[in-house]
Length: 356
Image 1 (cartoon, rainbow, N blue to C red):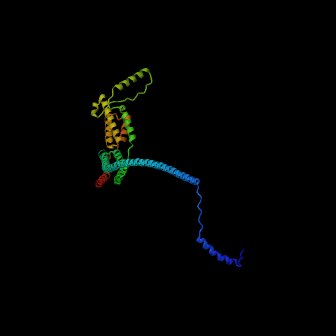
Image 2 (cartoon, rainbow, N blue to C red):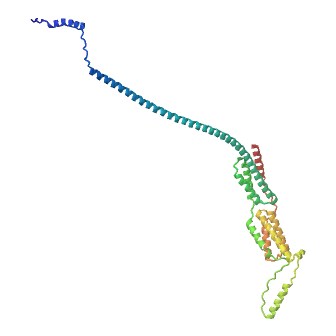
């Protein structure tokens, strides 16, 4: 027989729930143990053994691989160390070589510095010696020019000497030599302003005189004028020819010179050679510019021609006229001076001595 349901189910459920919870806490459910069979245990054991074997094999393989990698790393390290030692040895050798080269370079540098100092000292000595040599050469040229002017009056020779000295100074770029060059230029202009002779034309005329000496007749030599041919009968022509032959055999002429008798035919040859030598000496003097010597030689030549040669002959008269035209003037002219150049040279030498 069933009990009637309570009229308020919710209230009854609320009263029954605490009781059920208390019973559950008081008697908890026990877990049920799985049922292990021997087959399952064997399988589990085999799986465990297989896992252990696989783990051992994997560990051995990893250890072998790690050992191989370590061996390779060590071999690479050994090679790297060997290469490093080789590079270090090479670097050390290069360093020693560089050190030895640096020592050699320093030694060469020291030697070069010593040589440079010696070269500078030698250059200073050579420069001073060269200046002295140049001044000595210029002094010699100036003295030669002064001697040419004072002793021989050779303006052409003195001008050549001064121009040679000026050419030497042109190669010397030294400010201390400017006053000397200025004095030389002034003296050169002064010599050039002097009247110059036609040396080439004078020499050509003297050569013509030398070539015609053999054609000049001496005073005791006479050249008869050719007689015109006579016309007429044969006896008249025969008498005229006989008279011409007689005239050619006998010639009487008065001469006031007593020394003409000494001029023999052989002496005439010697006389012509002496006149030729005088004219040749005058020619050389003209070429050298020595007008004093040229005038003296031409004067002696004219005197000998007037004394020993027949001045009535046209060629002798022409020769005397030529000699008179070629002979320089005998008026005494004061020779030019180059004292300014000599004084400038002395001043330049004193300047270099103070600087040296």
